[in-house]
Image (tube, rainbow, N blue to C red; front, side, top):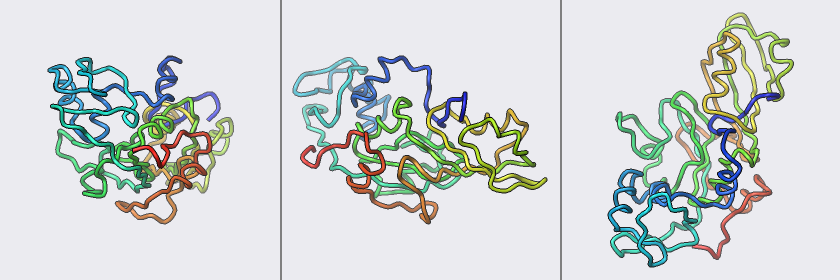
Length: 256
């Protein structure tokens, strides 16, 4: 959208150095352990600070030490944590499900829905509680960081329903916003984003005096939701990822 950041989760205020680190695939060690499903972020921080974690045989006590999980050997209490095999899926996140591994309020999470099929997978970005649609999950942290990085400018497409009628002139100056159909009761739109902030779409229409009643993501890059039903998922190959994100770094089959 012209003149606006345009993704539900990205923060355009990130410094260039932070963007560079994200593109390189490096993440904080405590975050790496959390993303890999080994420990929660808080548990990882405590384990690292207490000297229980080593990287390439060297004890690390700084939870913010940056690592590329696929390129290092991580051990806890001298027991190696093996990297999961390369795997990526497209998941149709239902409404009312949170995009997190554990929820302190006891709400259903995407990992509750996926069950054993979600083991070792990390979510690429998030969809909020009331948003449904396409969510990419992968064991490839470099790929996840690249897709989530606002500098990558990955296309995301949403179907949006708002209360009341949105006139064509109200969206005429906004790139990537198309009205599908409108009535006095509600308006259905397609919104295409490339960079932006958390809840950007909801804030955009709130600024027009319109409440978003339904928000569904139907595409990320070249990956599309298609007829995948809520709660269902499908495997994605390396070839499909390379075709959908031509400039992304994809872990080689020879890597762990």
